Length: 321
Image 1 (tube, rainbow, N blue to C red):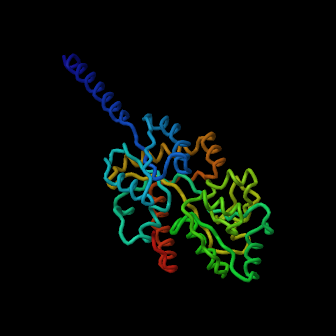
Image 2: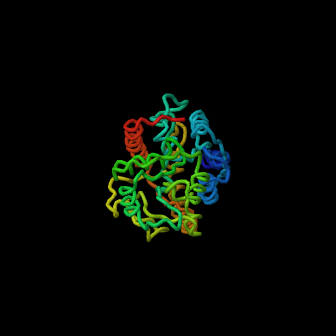
Image 3: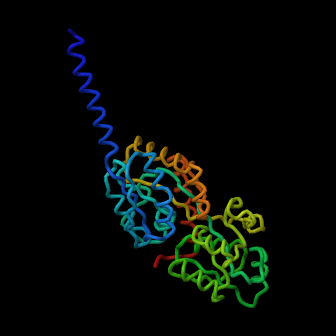
């Protein structure tokens, strides 16, 4: 008699569980990117989104929200649901530089957003035009020290990661290089190629097409070790230029209050995605170093980088434009 009543209840419970599982997987994930379509951040998002869809069993849609140095995208994510339906693929700048660069922001990265995982590193690379008479950053610095006036170094804008790297480079080399701030990588690269500026610190991901085609010559990497896709380019540390390490990393975040189980699910899916040989190969060809880790490790990196770049902004009196 008991079994007669238990069977329908058990069937109903299993059906309910199935519907709950389907409902959990049904929402589309909106992956917010703070840059326009076609740029390095968008390219990264598209490079991981297909595999991420398979890992999460959910559709991932790229949502480009450029403007205000990432503030538009960050503010949108901060006000979004905490169920994992809105995720933020952000570069380091919006999270660890902007808070020191601007007197006020419409978001607080460490209070309004939840760290989920590091995604990739894209270290800064020092490049010159191919016929420049230097082969390494050390030779470039020696030449600068002997020059009548300091050489010029291009960046992608005031307060950008390349700008931060230039400030570290100036301190380490004791050369007062002329910083020329452009609005983005394209004009900085154009003027480096044309000789209007002597060199350019740029994200590896944005420089790889120019390096592989030999239109730009890499002479040093601001990273703790050599890059697998630029094995012949020494680190600045190897060349005797100490304490100049900078990466415009990309990480995954959600709104503040995102439940631990959602963070864990997305983090594990990202780890599997970035561990896929095809994805890793694709990312490295783009000048990106896969760097998955725990949410706690990512949160620790954010705190450390915010302190590091905050000191640079303060010490060099840098103000956002």
